[in-house]
Amino acid sequence: MISILAEVTTTVASEVSGNVHLGLDVGLGCLGAAIGVGLVGSKVVEAVGRNPAASTKIMVQGLLGMALAEAIAFYVIFLAR
Image (cartoon, rainbow, N blue to C red; front, side, top):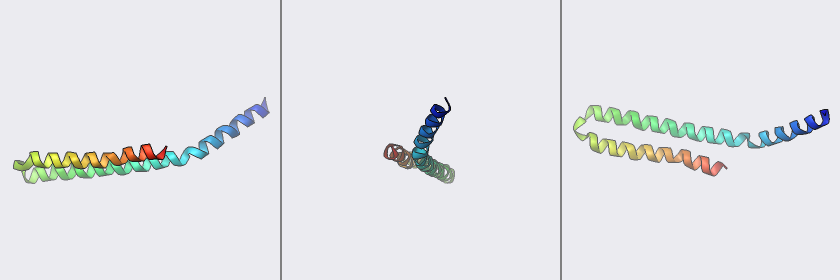
């Protein structure tokens, strides 16, 4: 019984240690994308506050910027696997 438990434990430990870097890569990539989206969003709000008449054009550019920043997270998720 103890030998089976030791074998299962070593197998699980080797699987987990082999895939830890994937979780760190994905986590850091998604963190960077989230920071990018936050920065774009804050600048969009600031720009609309400065020039409300151009809010439509600013929002379109802001949404494009957010989409491009968010695409980085998807690239990281798909390429890490």
